Length: 301
Image (cartoon, rainbow, N blue to C red; front, side):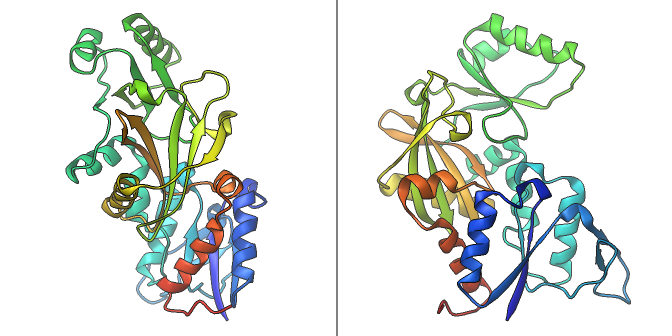
């Protein structure tokens, strides 16, 4: 029997996604433990290759690791993931891939280098020159924290005054956020696409739509979801962005523009409750089937 660990914080161990993954793993001969990554201690030495403890106890090494920590992946958690990689344990997604999407500016740098269509993006430099932003990006603009998910830390500034107020507020609270500014794509107001990618293949796609005139369409903010037909451009943008970022499993957010699409963001730990609910796709099953493939196992139940 194969044995693996899902690295997930306690507050997410009862989440829909975690329980669905356990259900699908249970359909195969794979035993999975839920492990809080913050309860893992690592030691670096040449004598003891199995240099980890969980809650102070030595456990047999798992045959794979599946981190489900997303934007909450701290330096400590990344160090734990890298430690497993150095011990030869397969990790889905890798620490490098998680790094590639944790920093939204770095994500866009990689996507731009891969010639993929993204909104024009700049890193905010303090003190901010609002006239410079207007000249090079133009209003309205989207303002985002470098790291975040579920639509948190994302703001729309329709003019110079609003941007100045937002930046002033951040300075007054003495929180030195790293912030990016992006052009606002007006065609996508209150709607976008969430595309689920496994092994560089699209396995689910839905349109998310705001129900309260919010420019953000996240389901976590009250948006609605609808199944959406995948065309060649959606398939190509989503699979190529996942490939460029080195992700085994990805949630790709696409914006509507002029009858086509632009890449908004890419997530290494995408939720899939809404995707399964609205598209009726077995996303958890697709993930588990891929993990079996990566481990060299057949997919017989």
